Length: 103
Length: 202
Image (cartoon, chains in turn blue, purple):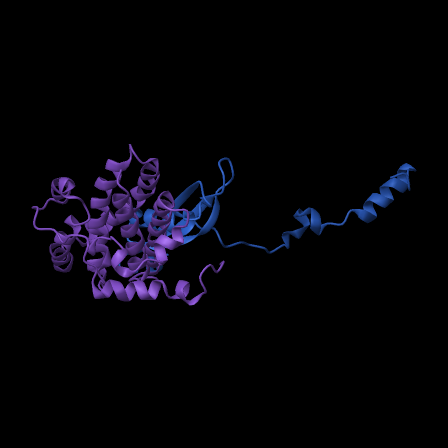
């Protein structure tokens, strides 16, 4: 990260924008600026000039703690509902309970 | 409020919008390119709003007059090919424009509306001025453009401009003398409009 952000004293600011009050902020893009003041002026024009944002968050990329490495040794899909079929088990259970076909 | 004052304001905003748009695609940094072009468009939007106070058809005022009928200040007409000079003009213009706009606000509600948007233009201009203030190019540009900046305002508002800019009042470059560079700009900017038959709908 350090090497990427020092472009002649320029910093990358990640820009998050909010559509309407109460809505979540969503990542909109970034601006490259020498300081927060330039970042604000540029982000206003790039992410707000059409009235599309009620608020912006500008976050120096340096301040973002990135998590991007995962161990997946045991194929974690069994933890997801879409990775685990219960159809056959459900049928068996219904037969045992004598309610097959009822649902 | 005299119509001539409002027409001067609208023509200044239009022509500065035209001139600053010349940086679209070639500003020194990509982010600034977008921002500067957006600000230029805002100025054209202000011009349109003021023309609409004066006429039912803003386009007629913006495009159908002869070059000598525009009453814009010479400051906004200058064809500046240098970023330092462009920023110096932007900054001087914003300082002058704030004095003029705030003086109009009581009588012209639209001026208050324009003023709220100009606040961000001032922020942008001031931030650049702070960054370039100590460079010889910028200082030379402000020296060169100062008499033009005074010409944006009527004589009674010039002392205020001098005080805000921290400079002495000198002889101003007055409105009313549109030069060849303006005629050339006008020809280019009205080309599309003139290419269509009168009364064409867009």
